[in-house]
Image (cartoon, rainbow, N blue to C red; front, side, top):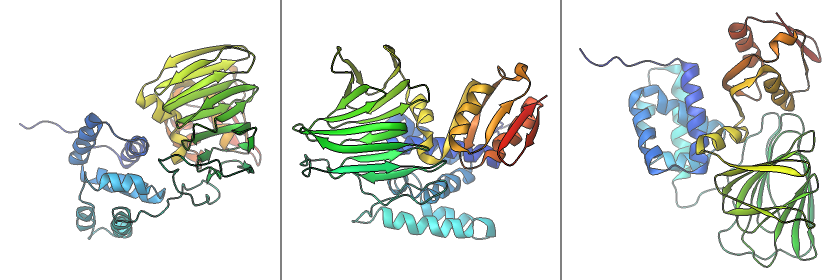
Length: 343
């Protein structure tokens, strides 16, 4: 008798595809590349799901990486008799053909409620600070935006985020007034790049990192490339390197190592997803409220500590609420501006 192979549901495959797309976005290790190839071989639907998701989010770099792992035209052939997948497969092949051509067009990061600005990645070589400049960027509820600064640095803003950037005394200075953003810094040692959040400085030259300013003015920093210095002009700085996270509350902070999977989960918002790994219902709803205008109220205090896990779309709160009903046995009442959860 052969081995028993579990067949996943469409929803499970879509969640797995979302996780793989996040990994493709930051680059696969050799081991992960082998794991992805094995995942493709497990189920013919897997390749279609991942290519479709990459197409939906205009992830050109991911499609280019996939071209060496999967024959995209095979997806089209397998789906020729399936009307549901026909247009997706043809579109995926067309997008992939553009992605692997000699000229890679600037990609755009899709937004949940509004179209992102079209951008191109910062150049690998050093670039001048482009003289004096000032830029203000902001996103509304559920929106994401990617933009280039005049110096070539790339900034991606999450929901409810506002920044003010400018050249100040020879430095590239960014105030994170609220929200969360990922910074891909153009290399320019003569003009330091400084992000200020809640009075704390994050200084970098040629690196990539994510900064979140929480509602209580605590600050979280995740470094994915290079190294940053965290502190303020009046105190000693702490260095954070790629694969580390710093969480700061007032004058206290801690630095911890984070796995690639943990980084993927923390930055899943780049692809319109939110990941929970055992957070309490109260914590989860606080996170969800960043992406919604609705006010969430847990009317039964005993529910607040219940744990939830899963991958959800930030632009589809209905799927999260349906999951809560099914798995936590709760009653959910939705009004025009509020959601009430009770036994």
